[in-house]
Every structure is written in C-alpha cells, then in structure tokens.
Image (cartoon, rainbow, N blue to C red; front, side, top):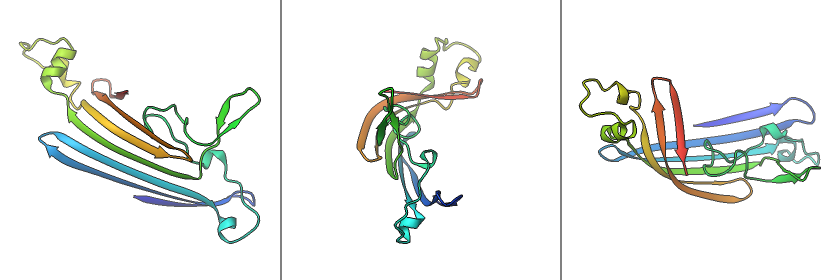
Length: 174
C-alpha cells in the first residue's frame, strides 16, 4: 500500500509526504509462518522541490519517529533518530525526513499442551474453557531494522498472547 499527503496549511507549512508499505506472509511448514514487512517514507518541502530558496518548516508532529513495539522493537518509543539538547540536558526527538523499516518474523501458534501447562490446567477436564481464551496466541522470533538518520537492528523472540475472554492482545519480546 502507499499514501501521498500534500499539506498546504499556511505559508510556513507546505510539504509533501510519501509513504509505502509492503507485507507478505509465507506458510513454511504446517503452522510455521514467515512474515515480512517493509516500510519507507520521505517528507520534502514543496518550496524546496520547486527550486525556491525559502524552505517551509515541517512540523515535528508530522516527521517520522522510530522506536517501540510497533515500529522498531527493542528500542524506546521514539528513541531513534535526530535529537536536540534542551535546557534540562535531555535529548528531545526531532523526528526524521526519510525513514525505512524492515521486519522478518517467524511465528507458530502455541500448542494446546503448552497452553494447558502455562495455565496449570488439567488435561482431564471435560471443558477446555481454561485454554479457549488463549487460542490464537503464538511464539515468534524476529529481526527488525530501521533507519531514521542512523541504522539500527534488533533481534529477539517473544510471545503474542491473545486473551479473547478480555479482548486483549499483548506482545512480550526481548
């Protein structure tokens, strides 16, 4: 999928933002699935593209940020990219104008035997209500990389736990 966003809110904010995403899922063996994801984006001042000497400011909120479980696992939320020192000595994120993100993930559903073990359920019960709410949970390993001025890489494993009784989906990863 892709998106194009053209912003012209004032004389100071005039830019174009192009984003693309590519997802693919490949079944490998029984319930073992290879997932691949690639995302790219670029933001440019329209004035600069048209050859003007005046460069429109691109608001921080519209710039790209990386870090956290939904963009680059293993890094703090918005923890990657250009930063600025402030008065207190903290380094605030400035966001980036070009980004890339890639993910390769190998996943498989958790077996009923493992779910029963994790929930301390007896295998002799007549109902499986104690394991039904964990249906859809899976184990995974991943390689995640991204660039927002600096190249970063994370490798890890985790559990995606789906609690259907409470409609909660949570990722644990390291």
